[in-house]
Image (cartoon, rainbow, N blue to C red):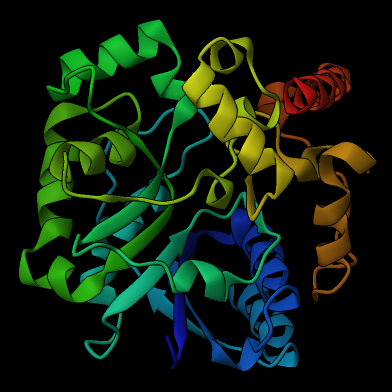
Length: 314
């Protein structure tokens, strides 16, 4: 597919550095960075921070546009954990982006793109308004998956996606006012997984699955037992780990919170050094999780590598 590749992020000043690192990972792994056009849904980002972002992206031969979101638009929406209200901004894509933009990739800020994003852009959406990756972490959990079925009206045969990587037919999104519909669901229900649950409810049985490697979340990266015990999920997870296209640090352990550990976050620091945030004080631990050790995650990765080798051989 020729033409621009339109990519959407959303953040405030606190996540601007991490969004820029994610953008840089895209630009350093694509054949033609001049095709990339970033749209940043802007939650009152400081001007000095925006300058750093713009310089980083333009020096890498891509374009970036800032789309400001009304400060109080999602003030009353339910948030919890590390989520900020910026997570809901994706629901406004149809109104915030130029009407000439008819297709986009939406990405969370806490991820790294390790493959050519053009390969994702070229995926067939099968006539659906949305394409995404199954969330095996939730679907492999008996408790979580049962809860989703009860809360969202799903059956055991249904699938549930992670909203951190989305391909969106923005023309259809506007035509059906999907953003407003999702906002109404989120505002009414205070879902546990926020806008992700709202989007799953809205696009129930009307989304195109993408290969798992395009959104490798911690349960897949660490090969949690709940995934290993299911042959179908295990096969998908092992295949995805063999060629990770997007590594998504969803959950509580972020790469910027720790010093460099090769197996865990070396790539984050590699791309950080190629941005105007290279002189930022690092690491940047979350004070709410002060003292949380990385040792357990490193052990999990070693164990996951073992299981990958084991099941690949046998």
